[in-house]
Image (cartoon, rainbow, N blue to C red):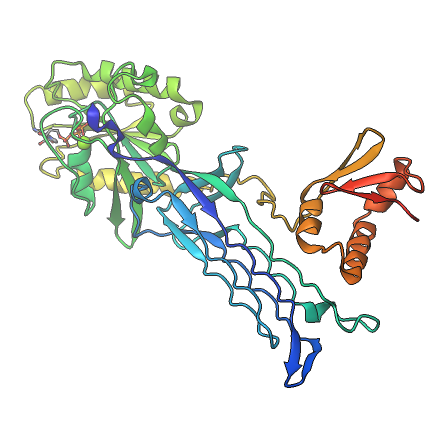
Amino acid sequence: MAERNVFLDKVRITVKSGDGGDGMNSFKSYKGKPACGPDGGDGGKGGDIYVLADSAVGTLLPFRYKTKYVAGDGERGGSNLCSGKGGEDVIIRVPVGTIVSDEATGSIICDMFRDGDKKLICEGGRGGKGNVRFTTARRHAPNFAQKGEKTEEHTLVLELKVIADVGIIGFPNVGKSTLLSKISAARPKIANYHFTTLTPNLGVVGFHENSFVAADIPGLIEGASCGAGLGHDFLRHIERTRMLLHVVDVSASEGRDPIEDFGKINAELENYSEKLSALPQIIALNKCDCPDAEKNAEKFIKKYGKKFEIFKIAAIEGEGVYPLVAALWKKLSSLPAAEPVKADENFTYKKSGDLDYEIYMDDGAYVLTGSLVDMLCRNVSLDDPDSMAYFQKILRDKGVISTLLKMGMKEHDTVVVGGVEFDYVP
Ligand SMILES: Nc1nc2c(ncn2[C@@H]2O[C@H](COP(=O)(O)OP(=O)(O)OP(=O)(O)O)[C@@H](O)[C@H]2O)c(=O)[nH]1
Ligand SMILES: [Mg+2]
């Protein structure tokens, strides 16, 4: 079973949106008249990372080869009020039915449920403001600019859970793929041995002016839910179907009993998940062109005919297939539409712009840490009075000073910010 992993249904990729470009700290200068006024432009915004559901992308295979996605950084602002160029966005195209989650927390970010669904995963960093933006009535020549916002790398898990209306299940070699090829334009591999199908095949089944999607999956065998055969990994591909089409080889061509086959597969579904085993089933008794098929079919219908809708077919000839498709469509019409998997509400990646801080006591001093402090350390120049005024204003505005006072800070107590000690003077 070396080919088992050919169908990639789960991959990890790393993504990083672009850093914001730094704001420019510059002054106009004319011949003989240097530093006439601030003219530093803003830095450009970093590029965003998006995920887009694209029906032209059939598998997650491309992510085996490319696992890192980095959006462009914003450019630095220029003098003469020139803004930096924004970084380029990255759009990651994934198959429809891909569920995107955050590896670190396991949170579901989005379900790329419909073709064209697009989701902003990480926003690019904000561009820093140029020094001209810090001009006030009292401060005519700010000698500092804001740094661009930095972003972090995150790991995403992409999991493909095919979306189809009907899941075709049954033992290996019973004719599931043959049937799909007769009712749709899909051309799955068909052969007279077990596990011909190793990866799910999707087919669009037309019925008059309507259509639905059927998924043919590898054959199930007894014990699959405990890992026998191809295991049950691929059962996840029919978790998102609305009903099942259960194909039984009624010719008993491999010496198995069709009634037992049916029971065994249903037991596997039950072992796998309640949800799967609760899906409505329609039964197709296949290979009715073979000797003994009629006798076995009658026995089967006698046992299950009251509980299930059963159709006798010879998929290879396309015989009996039309009424089966009609019944599938009728049943589907009575079932609720499929729903996307619920994403964790309000999940967003924090950027350094979402500033927070923590305060702890160390040897009588109040030590400040966190992204707010990192930002201040990047932006503030200690020997520039304007810059220091900005520093104090931010600490006040963000409620840091009031928190420190609540903690008991008094005049001349020491506050450590980014390794630098300050004396508190009210
Ligand atoms: N006589 C007869 N043979 C059929 C019929 N349908 C399918 N077969 C044959 O059964 C064999 C298996 O068919 P597949 O469609 O590959 O079966 P499958 O269930 O998809 O098999 P796996 O993918 O291995 O699980 C092939 O040799 C088909 O030609 C039928 O109605 N009558
Ligand atoms: Mg097959």
